[in-house]
Image (tube, rainbow, N blue to C red):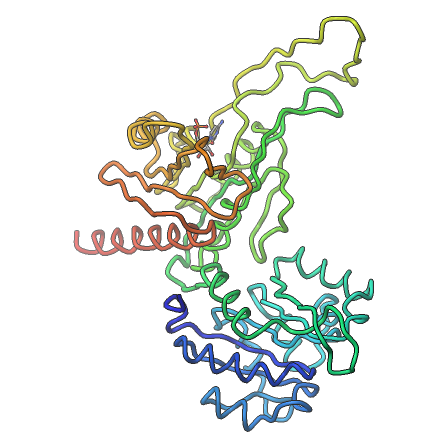
Length: 413
Ligand code: C5P
């Protein structure tokens, strides 16, 4: 299970709390899984575990307020994942408010990726509305909160606030690591991603829409950016936060999504990659009513005339500034390979990620898991069921390989 962690670098921040002793076990587990672990001990953390024991387990010097140098704040950029365990109420408040008062908070403010945060504190501190508001802020910015757990506390009270077990923190690192895998392999490449649903208004308060969560499209944008691409994300309304460091354009209708995509293609810089992951509404009402359509009891309900929406994927595939690699999605209820291959031709795109929908247990929309097939003009690959972040990581690697192979071929010609 820990195979995915081999060779990964983890930045572990240990802040003040009795649970800091469990972080020594976490370091041991991470090392056993093949990670390199760099550790920052805050002043508070140093009260509970010594730099010497942390350094011995990490097999490299623990960074403290007294030992750090300027370039240590960049550690958060080179790490594959940042873990804060234990995270005290104080460090949580500092991160939520963007304070940079010591090495740990400065490194976090300078980070280019969200962190995995394992809170540990007294249960009243945890339930305090200030802490809860800070946690909500951090979640809305894409940070992952692990735990806390219920149990006896060092102060003699009992409640929710104990740090999660090191094994559970390790599992959280494992399931989040694909998002953070990064390289510079797509540096200099521009990518355009569509994500989420489109909403087509009927009147000032009603619309036609769908249940797309945007999870897949947002994960692809994050994964491509993690490989160094300059990413523009065009998204319909979703409950997800804008991914860190990605230019995000918010739209509502298919027409607005199309306009935003065309604008992105009509700049001086070439767009190299387009991934259309949005669930674009196929139709929109022919007429947007100026006023709310009245319910007229006893009368026939109004009929809604629809017109077809523009096909964004096809428009991008046939645009004069067509991106070199255009990728679409296909949700099929039967004959997956054949229908997806037909769609590839019809939409004139290069690759299709296809999945079967509508069968028992395969909801896809809003779920964290998906089962896709990569279909190109020359191959069909079954990617087996995996998380949407793992699909995004695999797709970005396929894209990076594609451009690398192309660069080698171009050099040989
Ligand atoms: O035709 P269908 O909706 O099955 O095609 C799915 C693919 O086409 C997805 O990649 C989706 O983002 C894209 N699409 C689009 N504009 C539309 C309809 C679908 O970009 N109007």
